[in-house]
Image 1 (cartoon, helix red, strand yellow):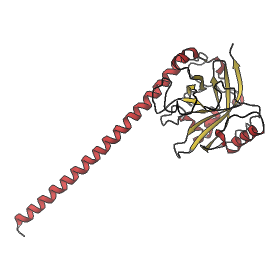
Image 2: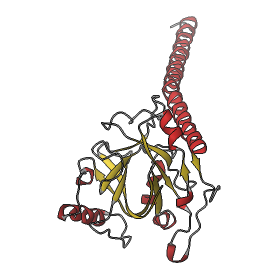
Image 3: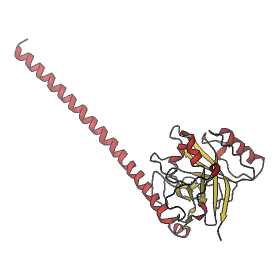
Image 4: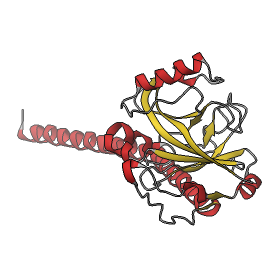
Length: 278
């Protein structure tokens, strides 16, 4: 083989190598651009949804007792936070959406970022991906189980919210699983309605499947209800020492785990106090 022929073969091989490298780089860039085209709208949706609900809290919640949202712990872990002084402008909220039935608020909203309106519809799909304004959002809304009574008169209520990666909605509830001391500092929350404020203390939390008995409602203060309470306490990831009575009212906060599609993380709380409005 002549030196000229060898040179041409070597040159051709190099050109083919450069072409292949260019094709691979172009393909990689296209993959990145495609991924960004899918990711950016999601991130923007997360941000917009989070801002929407932050604006709602600033607009419709009046917390004159503690504007900073700080929680002051009293003796033996009791909470001195003046939950009963918080007021929600339900008249204005219902003008925006008549499906608003309440507002859920943890004492220290900097730790548990749950400070949202509660909505109710005839099914569990309406507000799964829809916000207060009827706009489509990944975060959806916080909403009450459709089989419950919207005035919270049931002995057992279930409230749903998404486990958002940015910590919005029910995204910070996962902290109860990760840090045992988190419960000690964040054991209380309040549900506000037009007629009353209901004070709740968390007594159990665990991971269940979406077909668990936990998702059955319609209980009366009887043996079946006691069995449900016993089940909650037995499954709990932590023994809080709190066992509700069969005459107590309980609410469950439910969110996904982002691990398995059929898994849910649930937080159970018992009503320990309430304030009726005139």
